[in-house]
Length: 161
Image 1 (cartoon, rainbow, N blue to C red):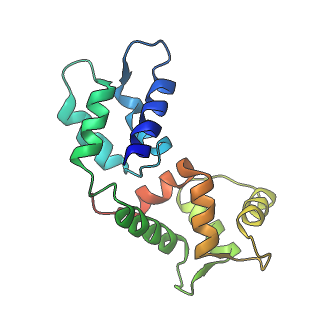
Image 2 (cartoon, rainbow, N blue to C red; image 1 turned 60 degrees about the vertical axis):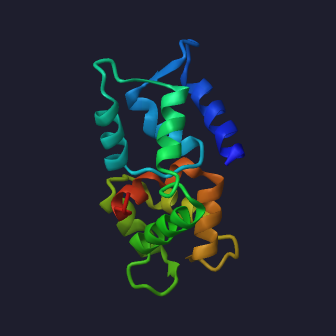
Image 3 (cartoon, helix red, strand yellow; image 1 turned 180 degrees about the vertical axis):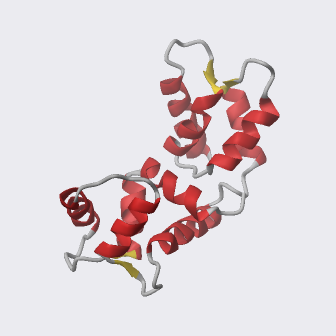
């Protein structure tokens, strides 16, 4: 947990552009995701509504309190379950991998406008073994390398928070 606190502090400081000691509420989700947590939009909205004191500003201590109060949601087991759920969003036929058509279809469902070439490039970057499919392990590697990239998928998967 200590490493998460350091990562959280580093992300907080990056979002505290002017060194004021607080961030605006609209930055809370991005900050948590960049620090390696995976809250969905409903969770963020709930926390900002609970915190609303007229100015929607969060100190580092406020953010740390949110993380500590929701430790079970931010646990590795819960993170892994969220990733499994996100993978299932793409793996519509449940065969253990995401093929090009599944990938393309889900990106369109999420409102991502990508050309055929961009989709091929994205799959190629994820497809570590070169078989033209994104397997669960490759999916996890992609998410680990790009923690913020999975945000829309997790919101679509609606994990329990």
